Length: 317
Ligand SMILES: [Zn+2]
Image (cartoon, rainbow, N blue to C red; front, side, top):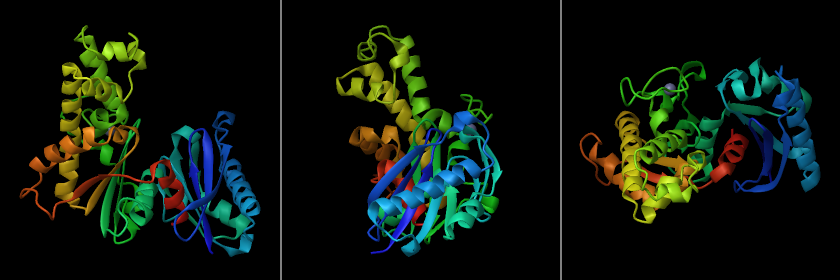
C-alpha cells in the first residue's frame, strides 16, 4: 500500500491525514496553527507540517521513504506553480515559500494550493465528482469559495489569481462585500448572506416562528434558522429561503453558462440543508441556463467528502 499525506492549514488548527490509494484517510492528527503568536515567515508552519508528517508515519508504521508525497492547502492567495503562499490573512503569512521550506526538511515532492481549489480537487478525484471530466465546487460557508477542475487540473487563472467565484457581482450597488465591492455573490449566497437575510426578515416580522427558534436572541441566528422554521410551515422563513435560493441560483446559472461543468458540487454548512435546498435550487437554476436545461446540463449535487475534502485533495496534489 502506498500513502500520501494531505495537510489542511486553517486559522486555528493544522489538520493532516495519511491517505491511502483508495483515497481514504487512514490516520489523522492536528496541531494548533498558533496564529496568535503573530506573523509567520513560514518556519513555524513548515516545522509543524514536518512534525505532523513524521508523527503520522510513525503512528501508522509507514516508513517515511515510502511516502509518495505531501500536499498542503491553505486559505488566501496561493501561487500553486511557485509553491508560495502569497497572502493569507487569518494565519498572517506573506510571500512564504512553503513548498521549498517543507521540501528542504523532508525531501518529499510537495504540492500546494488554495483551500477552495484543493477541496474541489478532492471532490473531483474522490468525491461527488469522481469520474467527471470537469467540475465546479462551491462551498457555502462563512464566505463563498469556489474551485474549478478540468481534465484533472485545477484551473485558477494566471499566477493563481483567479477562481474568485464569490466575488462576482449579482446585484449592482447591492450589499457590501468583504472584498470591497458591492453586490458580490458571496454577500448573498454565503452562510453569512443567508444569516443577514434571515435577521432582516425577523426584524420585519415580530410573529415569525424564527424568533422562537433562536430563543428571542437574534444573534443566535445561523444558516439553519430559516430552513428549520420553513420546515415548520413559517411563511417569513419560506420567503427568506426562496430569496436565498434565487441569489444562489443566479450565480450558479452564470457559471453554468460560462463553464458548463459536468457537475457542480455544493459543500459547506448551508449544503447540509439537503433536499430542502437542492430541489428548489435545481429548478430555479435550470430556468436560467442558456438554451434550456436537459439531460446534458450540469448536474447540481451535494459534495460528499465534507471537511475531509481539503486533506484528500491536498494529498492528491
Ligand atoms: Zn466580493
